[in-house]
Image (cartoon, rainbow, N blue to C red; front, top):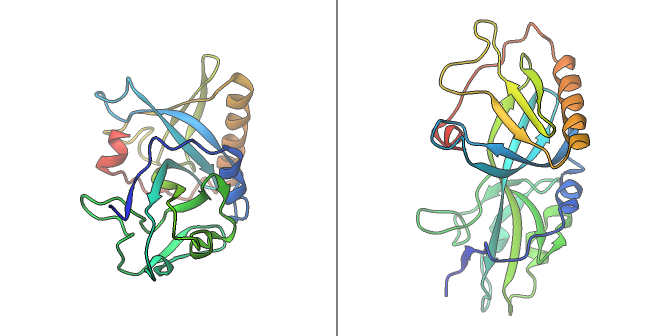
Amino acid sequence: MEDVKEADDAPTVDPSLHAAALGSRPGVLRVGFLQKEGGNALTRIFTAKRFFVLLGGRLEYYEERRLKIAPSKGDDDIAGIKTNDWNLVVFIRPTKYQDAPGRPGFVLGDVLIACDGALLEGGNLSAALADRTTAHTITLLRRKGEVPLGRALFESVGETRLRITVATKELVQPPGRPPYLLIAPDQPSRDAWLQALTLAAASEKMDTEVPWTTTEEEMDE
């Protein structure tokens, strides 16, 4: 039996748990699920559900993942996974629970949300998995990218869409990446995000350059 495997068929957890888990993270202004269009011509027609976290100068987005931890006999090294106060994985000792090619698992930067559908308070994975006679499902958020907001332009599109155009001192939109298009569940939610983003960007110093960086993964997402 595999020690860890993807649990895509596991029931989704209450979205409020994501906000509760990240509630103690310093600097968080707004969180929530939005649909995000792909970042290039091939993937733009598709949308992906992402969990967004708005901080002062950037908008981070995460993919929800669910991992099924198999029962274990005797001691194992789940204790080698350490988290901080808001459930961010900050240390992983070499372990069979670590993500590796061909083997799903935990990675640095994961945010642990729930164990078997219940809020994972304090990120104490060892305590949550104390009973190793049965399998457990861990819900987590894995970072996919971020949008720098210091010089971004925000526009409402239709009833539920929000367009973010990244800007730098030299370029209104850096080459190779179209504007971000996000889709809220309804118009009030879209308008609340638009207001929060506008205020967050305005609070940044407009003369501070935000370096443009992107990855192949972000382009595809």
